[in-house]
Amino acid sequence: MRGAARLVASLACAGMLAVPAAPSVAQPAGPIEVRDARSAQYDAGTATWLLEGRPVRVRRGDFEIAAARILYREKERLAIAQDGVRARHKGQTVTADRARADMVQQAVALEGNVVLEYQTAEGLAVLRAPAADADLRVGRVLARGGVHATWGRVELRCESAAADLRAQTVTATGGPVAIVEGVRVEADRMQADLVPQVLYGTGGVRVADPRLVATAHELEIGWGERVAMLRGDVVARHGPDVLRAAAVRYEFATGRMVATGRPRVVVHP
Image (cartoon, rainbow, N blue to C red):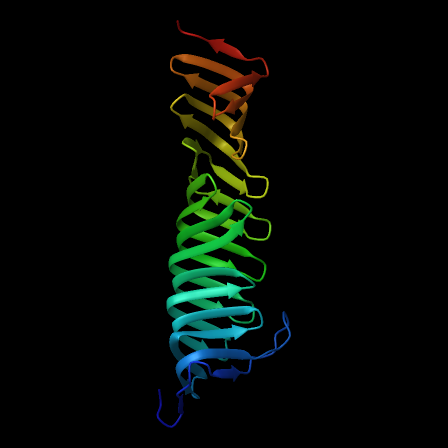
């Protein structure tokens, strides 16, 4: 920073600094508040603040981003954060190693050990990924680069996942694989609806556990009821025995199958 253009302020941990925000068409104008900063440096030439704390918090309205170090660019209303990043909006929180946050649009690009946690009827749901884009104002997160999500009795891995926190749904693409109480489920695309506790799969569906291997076009699993419904050219194999039908209900807690739609069975004695 240039010596004449730099303002250095030492702030107490409880101190607050208000930085004006330019008016926005999308939202009413409001200040950017800086809290818990241990030091703040301002470069008038670039209109940039360098903020540090344990952590320092930058807030506008209901949106806040916190980290050990934040570079705030006034003209762009952009906060560039690193080291223990936490973005929060009305109880929704996502953490990462690094982030770039638009303080007006409340959109955040996160990188490195991204973790999203939110409460469901079954308890805490956790989504982890190397990178994600989050719009916490509308409760949407798009995670990518190898996603691992867990909630209730379900574990899900995929290349990318879109979470809608308000609707409590997770849509997985890129070779999604789910484990539901020892049952392995594969499909081209999956969607989990966490309120009724249902997992949907479409395209290339495959279900496998120690008692059954089955393929189908579509899948619906109620993990609360421990029931899987397979539809569309279902082929189920139990050892050498083969069942073909339009639809199969599989109760994976007991191993019971019920087939409908002109079922055909080949049993090997």
